[in-house]
Length: 143
Image (tube, rainbow, N blue to C red):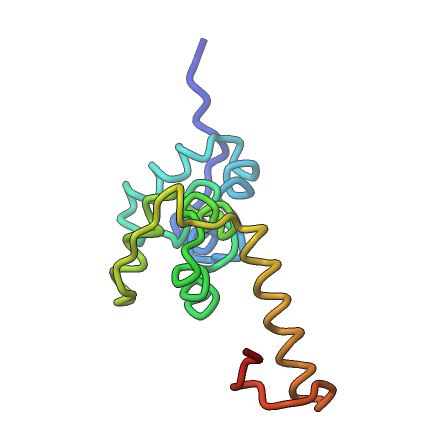
């Protein structure tokens, strides 16, 4: 049995596909009839730059939303699942962006669901204050 070498394409065509980030590696692999790993090998052999993301990469990390999650003490695994990245990338990215250290453990962390509910409530409260539908000063709390 011979090894599957896949469809032959020119250097320029492969480079074009690889550098087109709207084209996932799986689509390139399907077009060439090879595995995603083989696509990566071909790119390394050709000394092409690494692509953003990686296995299971999802939505792009949004610094503002990421910081809100970080400061709310959302569990790192939940942040990683939300953005579709590996959990190790969460603390690395926080350090890279200069976020403060935090003490996140099972007793003081929150789930993504709790974060989303809190954020929605905060946004709703802000909308009510902006629409002047709530009496009083938002900076004062009733005693």
